[in-house]
Image (tube, rainbow, N blue to C red; front, side):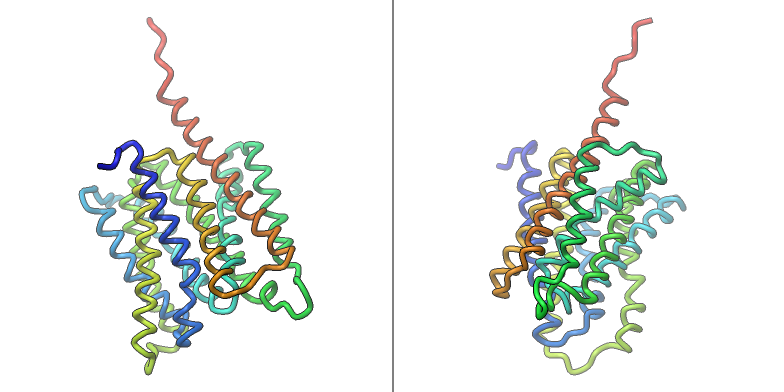
Length: 309
C-alpha cells in the first residue's frame, strides 16, 4: 500500500520518467522516417484526451465564460508552444532545447510582477540572472563547425519558453478566479484540438506514404507526454507545490539531457554545458521561489486566528 501522504513521490517520479524519456525520443519519428512535425502535433493533440478524461472524471466542469476565456488562453499558448517544440526538435538537439524551455518560469514571474504587481524574491532574482546568462551561453558557437549551438531551433526554443511561461501565468490567473484545475485542463485539451487544422494547413494536407512505424512511434512518445501531464496534476494535488514543482522542473530535463547525450553520442560545448547547468539551476530557483511565495500567501491568509472579542 502506498502512503497517501507520500504518494506524490510516486507520481512525481513517474512524471520525471515519462517526460524525460519523451523529451529524448520525441524527435525520432521525424529523424528516422521524415514524419512531418505538424503530424506529430496532431497525434499529440489527440493523446491529450487521455489525461483530460481522468482529470475531469469526478470533477465539476466550470461553465462560466471567464473559465472558458482563461482556459482557452492557457490552452492556446500551451498548444502553440507544443507546435513550435516539434519543429525545434526536428532541427535542434534536445539536450539544449529542453534546458531553454525549462526557463519558462522566468516569463511567468516577470508577467506576475508587471501585471499583478507581485514582489520578486531574492531567490527569483538569482534564478533570473542565471537564466539570462544561460541564454547568452547557448548562443555562443562551440566551434566554427558546430551546427548544434546555432540555428532556427534556438529562436524557436525561446519562443516556446515565452509561450509556456505565459501559459503558466494565465493558469495562475484562472486559479485565482476560482476555476478548478480540471476545467482548465479540459480547455487546454480543447485548445490543442482546435489547432489541428492549423497544423494540417502548415504541412499542406495530410501526409501520404508514411510507413506505419512513424505514426505508431509518434503515438507512443506522445502518450508519454500526455500521461506526464496527468502525473503532474496528481503529484501537485498530493504534495506541496514548492517541493513538487522544482523537483519535476529540474529532473525531467536532466533525464532528457542524459538520455540524449547517451543515445545520440554527442557532447555539448563548454559554453553549452555551463548553460545547461545555469538554465536548470535558474529555473529551479524561480519555480521554488514562486511556489513558496504562493504557499506563504495562502498560509498567511488562513492560519492566523481571529482575535478574541
